[in-house]
Image (cartoon, rainbow over all chains, first blue to last red; front, side, top):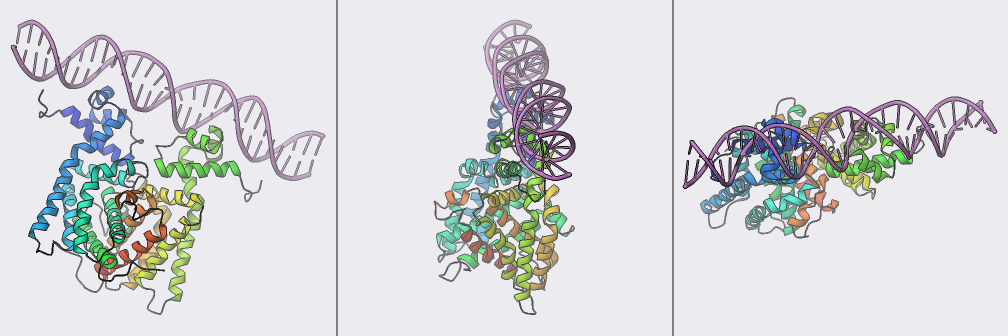
Length: 222
Length: 222
DNA sequence: CGAAACTTTCAACAAGCGTTGAAATTTAGA
DNA sequence: TCTAAATTTCAACGCTTGTTGAAAGTTTCG
């Protein structure tokens, strides 16, 4: 069988695993739940992927390259359309975030589950150190390099802390917990991705400028 | 036995449960692991707390009131020391965040585990809706009311989205994944709480001002 | 002391877990 | 069409899980 041919049951296992892992975490999901959701025998997951942990990793690998290259393309595009000074902070953050919004808006719920799963591992003291670097360090380092150019007075320490804040705001958005819906009494909707990113981008850009901007001094002291 | 008397084994169960739940999540921890960590028989957890889920809830209840009243006290204090205009955005965010830093700096690792556990549920699509409102809605509503006064031109929608970004940055800080340590090559340390909050506060305050500030218009449009 | 109440352990349960080898079924290619 | 390979199911394994009832131990207090 050609590697390119679609394998419907194999893909359905990945789809269901993606969704359930995102909702309940690695230990909160059993292979039997995944198999039942995919309409398939338990042993089939082992046949295609091996151990449970290998299935978990396969879920990540399926979309990793596609997502990373989309975000890298967005950075390259904004760099080419910018003046010789390079792109602004807003443009860089836009390039970092908008591809995620687009993925969430494709209509394929798989992308939403996948990004919620990224949020799960990024916030997990156990999985974070084991998975985030491998998946995203190359990409993030490029973006931080671009931000360093846009904020020439910034200390590296400040840049990384600002990225940490950006990553946190993004992570909670990707997790799709619906908390803001309740808290705002319906005025905000987690599923309104455009609103989420339209608020996140200027918020984060202003934060970067405040902490990494004009002054030579560091951030607020007590 | 008096309710006030310390119950060392009961407390050790809570301590170990707090730590393990924060690291591995609810499903990633077994009652036997907790019992072994506490040097106690499995059945003792059931005797003191009932079902596993009841133990999970007991971990939250132990520190909830203390933490919430500390943060509320900080808000009241900054409101009283402020002029008739009320406290500034920075002062309000400071009151929201600094008590967490102080808790993390007490030297009692239990507080760090507890706050990492809060991060876990806040980022979880399963636990978030079930636990966050009960624990924090009252407190958060008060802080947002204070921010609304400090930012009189803000639309409610914008305020809630900004709070969402604040909550995300805070959550990733509390999770203590150590990601920033690796990414920055040691220039930043997750465990350097003072640095984390000293960067978070001006970052977030600038974001609030940018999105909820002077202009009558909304946040960035495409 | 002695009995009642509380705490802790012991032993066991039924159910569910990940994993595996072999059998059955479907697919691919000559 | 026939055969070999790939896919899928079946059946079962050894282990671990949360929970429980009863026994043993400890504390409290009259």
